[in-house]
Image 1 (cartoon, rainbow, N blue to C red):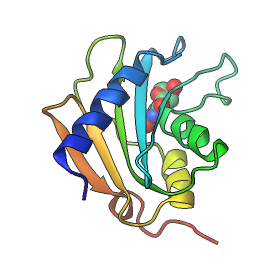
Image 2 (image 1 turned 30 degrees about the vertical axis):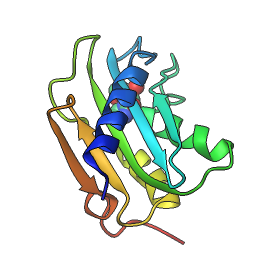
Image 3 (image 1 turned 90 degrees about the vertical axis):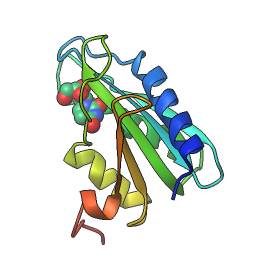
Length: 136
Ligand code: THU
């Protein structure tokens, strides 16, 4: 279980990363902050593309940054997203593709924080968000 201080740090890093979102097509801006087992934090934002399908979600940006630097074990991720540049108004749950990427690198107790702001957030386990996930 994450401590409140760790949760607050991840929320503020996710909201900060959201400012870098490149979302000219949807105008839906998402930030993520991924906490590794050794305490490192890897942030990400969504990066859209005019051909649409190359779009990368904030969560996968964070995972791919970490994995590309040799980090493969994780405790938690915080996600914050919503339309425009204003503050998010509700939780932004991860898409199915991002849940599958989490299944690749994380165990059932991996924590997923869906943050609106530092006061409003929900914590889920990966097991709850992706029951019966596909693994080889
Ligand atoms: N998006 C994310 O980055 N993460 C999510 O959890 C949901 C969706 C992005 C993808 C796309 O750039 C925009 O939000 C609208 O779908």
